[in-house]
Length: 191
Image 1 (cartoon, rainbow, N blue to C red):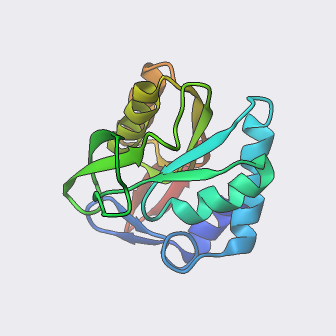
Image 2 (cartoon, rainbow, N blue to C red; image 1 turned 45 degrees about the horizontal axis):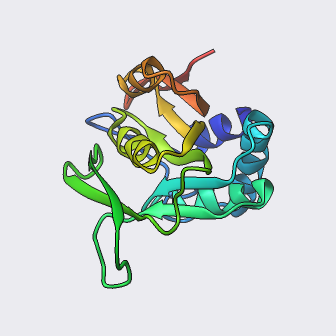
């Protein structure tokens, strides 16, 4: 999606250690008009898949997932990183390691909201090492639901996550795929 690539070039900030800061428009301050265009693109890519639920992980994927859900006319479920008093009863659970935070989290989704008859599209802001996606995929599998694919805003194609998830047979569609990036040379996108 050229619009997202151009925005990354204009407003993204590259930091040492493979970190791309897009917090001015994607995952802190959110450009909802951009999210709307991303939602339309996800619908173009997955609109014929019969999506009944969109699944994401707290917190950065929630905004993108919610706007996309308007186009799919379906609910959004977000996997919580901590069990709270609000979630009572049975839950699906999985472990994920955050590239950004360097922590391992238990993620949970209430069994009340994810069912075997669901056709699930996972949406997230970043794909780097694939841990978050693997955790979300496990939740879908544990529910006996059908995973139709994963829609990713920004994929760091130079990291192993995309190849790993695609190697599992999961359809991954990324709106911007970064081939390389460095403080010195900026961002290069895949063709």
